[in-house]
Amino acid sequence: MSRILVVEDERHLADGLRFNLEAEGYQVEVVETGEEALEVLMAGPSPYDVMLLDVMLPGKDGFKVMSELRGSGQFVPTLMLTARGRRTARLRRGSGRLPHQAVRSSDSECAHPWLAAPP
Image (cartoon, rainbow, N blue to C red):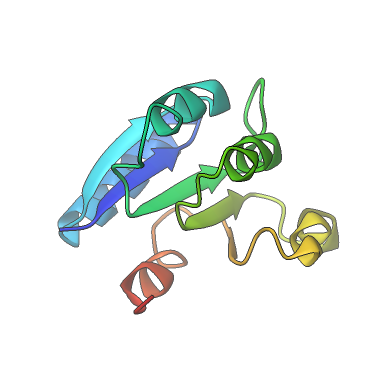
């Protein structure tokens, strides 16, 4: 069973992602801040197969979290979630550091095909 870390500060969205992903058979843990995600992931080898990471978090945003993780040698596959669906949200993606991005919707439709794809 795949383990997924969801980093989302809006509780209703996190709950919706958890509900849909667990219905598909994934194990899901939710944290609300970038700092919490870093604490969990920097403690040692990642216990997660995938991370769903909100871009717009209070404190350390999703881009800062990714930068710190990559800088420390943590390379858990990550799907960035954003409410911003236009060019401004995709600017940082062009650097090659963020291979996948999904525009956030009210359910997991955008994430499921990516999660189910073979590595």
